[in-house]
Length: 163
Length: 426
Image (tube, rainbow over all chains, first blue to last red):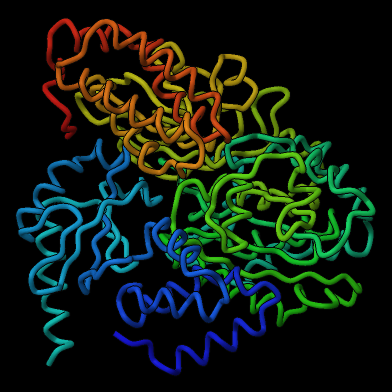
C-alpha cells in the first residue's frame, strides 16, 4: 500500500522544522501505520528516506516496539494484557476463549481481516483487570460474556462502515 | 479522611480545568518562585522537604537537581517520565487524568530550579488519552502565559512537548529513555557521564517521575516542614499514591500518608480481601520488588522502613496474592514478562532470564529437581552483573520466592506437580 502524498508532505515539513529530526522516528512510523495499517518494507524505506537514517536502524526501532506492527494486522488489534494482575484475574481462560471465538492463535489474524490478537505486558489498568486494549481503547474488567459482546459490537461497527 | 494533596482536585469523571486549578491556588507557586526565589533557593527547599523520587528508585530530588552545574551549558532538558510500565503501576495515568496542570506547574518549578530550556513528557502508547489531555492543556497553559519565551513577564523561558513512545518496558529506565527520545534503539547507557552532565543530545538533563513533579507546587506553597509532617513515620515525607490490585475488593489508587501500614491500605482502603481469601503475599512496589509475606502485613509503607527490612517500596504498586494462588506460577508470569521485555543488550539479562524461566516452568509443571533450586539461586545472583537495573529488578521476585516460599517451591518438586493444581489462576 502506498503512502498518501499529503502525509509525506506534512511529515517532511515537520522533519525539516525539527532541531533533531531523528527524534520523530516513532511518530513517523506511527503516522504511517495510522494510514496504511502497518509498516511494510516500502514504508520503512520511505521513513528512512524522510529522516535520512539508514533503513536498518529504522528496522531495529520498528521491530523493537510493541505498538509498531511490521506485519499486516486486522482492522481491530486486540492487545490482551498477560501481566501478573490480569493473569491473577483469569487471563488464561480469557485468552483461550478469544482464540476459540476468533479461530486464531495468539499472534494470528482472522481470515476476514477483522481481528488480530496480540499479547501485551501490563497496560497500566490493573484497577480494571483483566483488561485489554483494542485500537487504543481500554476494556475491563473482562469476562467471557463481555468479550463476546465487545467482539459482536466491533463486527457490527465494521459492517456499518462498509455500507 | 486523610489529607488529599495531589488528589485534592480529583473528580470521578473528568480532568480539573485550568480555571479550576487556578481557583484552588494553582500556578501561585510558579509566580511566587519567579518573583521571590532564586533557583538555588528552590533546590534547597526541595532538598529540605526530603522529596524522594516516586518512580521507583527513591533518589532525593534536591540532590539530583544540585548535580546540574551552575555553569552547565544550554539547552538544558527536563524529562518527565510518564512511561509507567512497571506492572501493577497506574498512578501517573490517574494523576494526569485528575489534574494535568499540577504536573505542568511541577515541571515548570523543576525547570526553574535547574534553568531548563525545554521539557519533554515521555509517555507510553497505552496512555494516548493522557497524552492528548496533556497536549491540549499545555496549549492552554501557553496561551495563559505560563509557558513560552517570557513566562508571566519574568523573562524566564521554558516550553514543553509530549513525546510518544512505541511501547517497551526498558524505556522507563532513565538512560534508555534518553536513547528513545533521540530516536535510537532504547538500550540503557552506562554512566559516567551522568545525564545531569551529558544527557539528551549530550546536554544536561534531569529526569523526574510524574508523581514527584506533582509534589512541587505544594512544597513551594506550604513549605518543607509541612511536607514532612504529612508522613506518619519519622524521616519520611509527603503523601504517596499507593496503587493496590490483585486479590482485594476495591483495587485502585489511594493517596495516603507516607508510612501508613500495609494492613490499613488493604483493609480500610482496598476493602479487604474477597470472601474466602486470606493474605499470603504481596509485591509492594511493582514486579521488580521482592515478595513480602504475612510477617510484613503490618509494616509501615515508607521508603526507609522497607529498605531497612530488605525490601523496596518501588512505585508503591501493591499487588496482593491470596492463599489459593501458586507463587511459583505467579513468578513464572513475572519472569515471562521480564524475559520478553529485556532489551537484549547485555548477556546476563538476555540469556539469564530465559534460562530462569525454563527452570521455573519445569518446577511449576512438576518436572523440577532439587538441584534446580541452587541453579535458580546462582542465576539470580548473575542477574546483578547486568548492564542496568532491569535484571536485578527481575531477580527480586525470584530471589524472594526462594527465600520466603522455599517450602512451596520444594512441594512442587517432591509432589511432582503444582500443589495448587496448575498454572491457571481464577
